Length: 396
Image 1 (cartoon, helix red, strand yellow):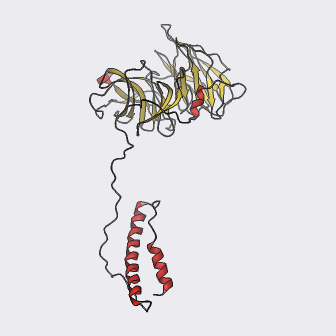
Image 2: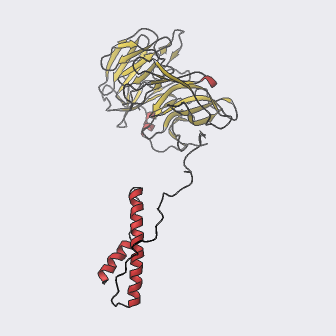
Image 3: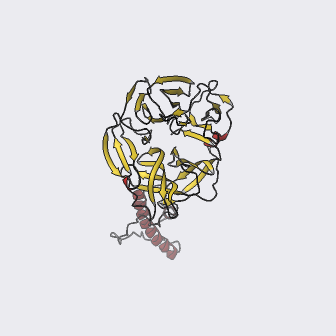
């Protein structure tokens, strides 16, 4: 073997199996490399012993000893994976976030500068929970507009109880439209053109849910399904109070999910997409939670993200029956996968869930933050907007 051939073989021995290769290819290449290294080692020793003389060609045995396969390394459980019950840190950090601008004042009316896509809506409230200024529209360009194309009245029920017209869920998942329930009508706004459309409907209407090509709007006694393109309305047998907002990535025929009950009678139900007919019902399962944790009752809007469902809840923890919390469930089985224990020292109904982001984090109200991100898989919670009194609606 001449010097050039020896140099080529030594170069091969220096190669490593690239980590970016698939496992199967990597294991096979590792076996070939080990065999080559054994052959080169023998050749190198022979060359040294010969002192530069002619070396007889050395070959590995025709039937080399079997090499045990290289399997994947077994590593301990990922330390970043959080357990089923999590708690927020004592002090939140506030990394830069596009939604943080929801706390900024509006600088231009929507009619003068429509958005390409809205990231969120916000309306300040006073201490009596009444609207305290126009709705702000945060565009994906970072500019905050005032919603000047319509004057929104508070929603009312038959008993005369009022609430702000801006509620979680009124902004479409694509951020291009908003829909507001009003007494005897639904107001739909194209945020990309500032055009307003009014659709007359009977009754006291309070809640809005975007369901693909339709907007579901209702109150205590009825729910309408309104076609987004034509404005045609029909009734549907679901309650907008308990309906879970569908995943915008799911098809228009994906079943509707709703949740009912309290304590041991909590139920997760599947309904047909178009008529709202009941398909299946199963109990909410908290067996994966450590004792004494339980979910007592859900509140606020729930949100689907793939096969996971997030919603605010009142829970039982080690201190109290009725603490604030938020839960992530398997939408197929009803099992509670993650529970965020927010403790007892918060106002009742403080911490509604506002949706998911595109990285699988839950967006929610959280004191002392006005908005926060919760990553259920890791337990990480970070603030977005601090101490901002008002109501939010976020795009999907």
